Amino acid sequence: MPDVTGRQSLTCPDCGTPVRPDRERLCPKCGYLLASLRTTPEPADFGPQRTPGEKGEATSVIPARRPDPTGTVIDGAPLPGPGEVDCPRCRERNPMERVRCQRCGLELRVPQAVAPPPLPMAPPAPPARSGSLARKLLPVAGAVVGAAALIGVAVFLAGRGPDLDGDPPPGGGGAAPPGLVQVDPRSVRASASSTNPDRGFAVTNTLDGDAATTWQSDGGRLRSNVGVRLTYQFANPVQLTRITLVNGDGRSPDDYANNQRVKRLRLTSGSWSARWNLDDRVEPQTLDVEAGSVSSLTLEVESTYPGARFKDLAVTEVAFYVRS
Image 1 (tube, one colour):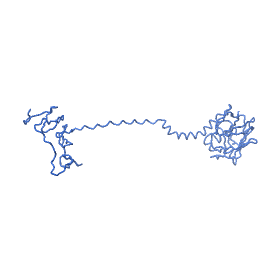
Image 2: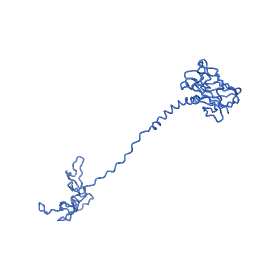
Image 3: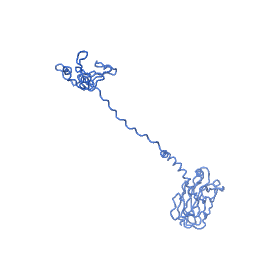
Image 4: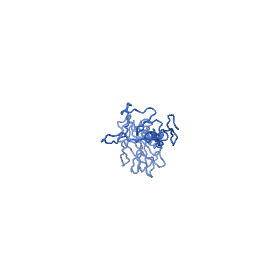
């Protein structure tokens, strides 16, 4: 069918779109090759001719336009206008709606790269559990508990009272081996060469199994506590094997530090004697002896640890053990 200019109007055999095969190489809609519809063959494009003797170049036939950052065109070719697109291969200016270049047939609508799926987000960190806080506070709590244990151990052990069933409480030197029994403290009489006149510090407090009571010397009237003696008389001779002693005033940490404590003792019973070096700590301390049969035992002070405030010497508990 002729158009208004008298020329034959042609349509794409593939999609039916009106086409101009003399000006277009491919259908602008479906890309169908229109060479078979042309009335005259298309001249071959061999590029610009070279002068005789000029070497061929491996560069593109049509140089690419290179806009600088200001938007001007370096090689003098104008930039494409609105609604137009340049073919990246032959630089032919094509309408924006074309699928392929109307000159060389290059696909103009390059598929957009598909963005990779986002990486999965890491799950949020779980809230700190109370156990984590407990682990952080453990060193602090341990220091407090450790300080309190010095008093608590002695209070617990000595507060049990006399063990009349035969099992001695554990001392600083370790638990008593099997076969040891405690001498009934009710059968023991105690005396001291110096005692604080306050009735709350009698020497019998060292036999009551109560860490809240203590014996103290009358240090304010003595030049020194060296030479002070504690004597224990047994109702019947005993085969003495072990002695356990709680040093100092065990009622509280302040009381312990304020009063003097025993540093070294000399133990005597008849012809038998021994020396005992005591640590400056409130836990029960134990001395294993082989004194044989004894009716009495004297503990004589040879040196002391100084008190922060008072000259009085303190002992909280003394216990005796024999083999069953």
